[in-house]
Image 1 (cartoon, rainbow, N blue to C red):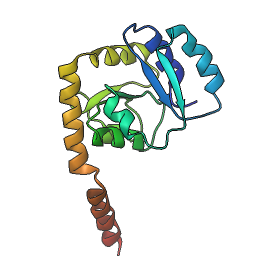
Image 2 (spheres, rainbow, N blue to C red):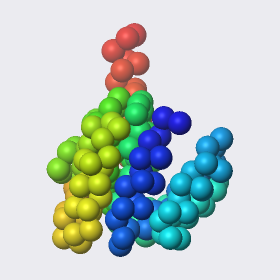
Image 3 (cartoon, rainbow, N blue to C red):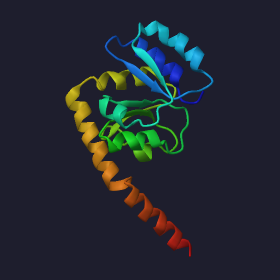
Image 4 (spheres, rainbow, N blue to C red):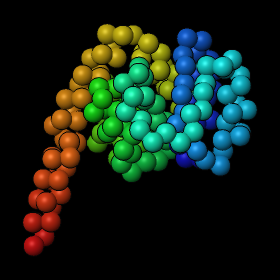
Length: 159
């Protein structure tokens, strides 16, 4: 419910040259599949996907228009693959996605801003710049080595 998928489906249905692949399962699947039918086959539900890595590399962008998120791993994984994000400016997302640098942040529940952000992702040069910056930010802040060192430092500061 909180992932903002209804709005995402509506926006993608209004963008004729946009395809959407949704990974995962949930209680809204049947309702969302009905909404997706308006997009003329441009929205596909993948179900549970064990390894999203190949999907990140194939994607132009990853969209996460959630109402609230703590620290979504999907955005960190996408950045590791050089895939920019379109996500809501909520919770911990701005710590992962830097607006205009590694992706685009939109206000939660703002379909107009979400539509505009997804349209901007149709420009290959812009996507490439954001994706390269996202990957550089991942290398700087989110590799397992960096995250482990940061966590160790927190524990050591408490000792």
